[in-house]
Image (cartoon, rainbow over all chains, first blue to last red):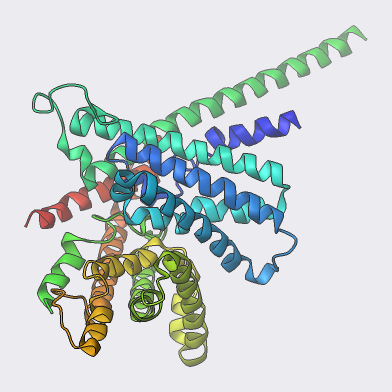
Length: 224
Length: 214
């Protein structure tokens, strides 16, 4: 059980990172990452919807008929998105204004429907909730990193705090649409380099272990 | 009705993909071949037009008078899912050729944020006038008349839906054309695939950025 939780956590945040590994939910990743604060808000909203929808879908997994499952999933997700939207409008109106239409568009975020379809619809409640939590965290951390980079370079501030004079050094290009594509493309490339290096290391280790076991076998045979 | 304004805004200055970031998933996923990209673009355009045609009256005549605006997301997404399903059935029955050409792309359209995005956008433009139409009807009936300024009519809503769809088609076909060359380039291994497509889109976005300055 502990092992399974570890697997879920690793899968959600690193091995199957929705933003950089699976390249899902690209629209909010590109659109709201102009500032770090917006990215964090978006990430937490998605995480909340993901956990709640995963739990409900997992509870109803034996009730929902297979043929109409997609509309059922979408209605459940839309309900939670409406809750998040009303909550934000009431308590964090600034964030509500700046996220704008993308708050409603969480409904069609492929990460949420994807997890409902591939995980929550045939796994028990506890694990589904954890899966939602870690997938959401993976998404949140990734887009916050992107938000930090774009805000730092584009407007010389971090979470709204002015770090240095924007006139002295800032590249407004990064707050534009084109800057979003560039940042995302380069980040995926950097992550690809890391993933490839780790893969090679794992393969190398396995290869080394195999050679060792072959050696021990041969030495054992020779001893006989 | 400012036809030229809507056309330029929807095709270039407010281009759905490259300026507003909606419908990025099909933009990256279905842009390997220009023919497939054109099919996806046309499917999206058709669904966008019908979505505007249906969601606008439902919002103005049903949700607003009943004060159920907060249900808009649930209602809209259900309408879109039902519309796509219906369109699929109608095409299958009356135009099997078109159906088989669009076949794979139609179901994908439901979870395309561009569709829900256009429905929300049209409604947003409408709510500025605070359901001008309903108010106007009530006010005329009551004898008074208040001017609620320029309003987005059903015709304009559907027309902008069509133009936003064509803007999406333009962007995805252009990217598919560029990718025919870019995918053949011999670039460093980590840059292959998504990163290279993103960089191509970056240059396209720069070109489209010019229009937002006008």
